Image (cartoon, rainbow, N blue to C red):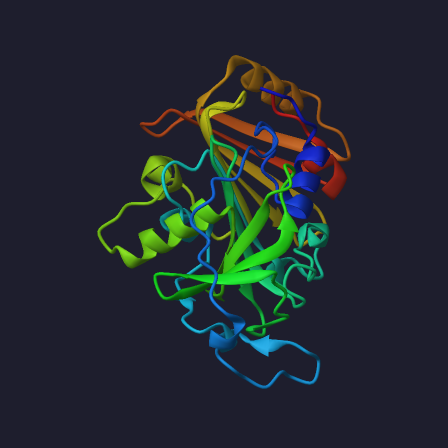
Length: 295
């Protein structure tokens, strides 16, 4: 399992989407479904806005699902997400965490909230809510899946495979097989997503942070939840809640707690609750907090 610096982790996580956050390998092959493309003549017709963006309704049937935390994303993610990350860009604007905001490149408009989940087979899914519910219709071809319009996007993964998207609140983008799996999960009210695999851990946290991440089977712990906050004094706080913390991570946190500086402080508590959680709070300037390695 490869080791990455915190700065590398977050650069990949926010910019590229991000399947190598701390441990994930480069994207593997795309699992293609059938691509029975429909004619563009069958698309719903609408008048574009003056800035060339169109309303989400231009895409026809839309996804309608809450995306206010990592738990909401995991509930829409098919089993088993190896890890996931949620960012509320609107809440980061004007704070020291602003560098972690989503860019507007993907849809040609601002992304209010974004989520990523990645899987052991190298596939991934992304979910985005668009602040003005408008987008630039950039696609190569289209098909349908369960009455939703499936767009083949110009974006490709590291292996050259195209990404696919279905629009809505949120929009779903990723490898075609995973996008289809999300739709299957949403349409089947009795199906279970990836949340159940993290429920025991996530029930111990508030899920109100603008940046949230979960992972399993890492060098840090069997499972951990991580969140980032901007503090009123201009510093940042990074909080980790771990189940089954590793010896190396324990030693690293203890060392951070003992060797605090003007740039970074660490407070750590072990054996919390019946789950024997480890809870660590790392505070300081943005760079020091992000770059602090917990291995």
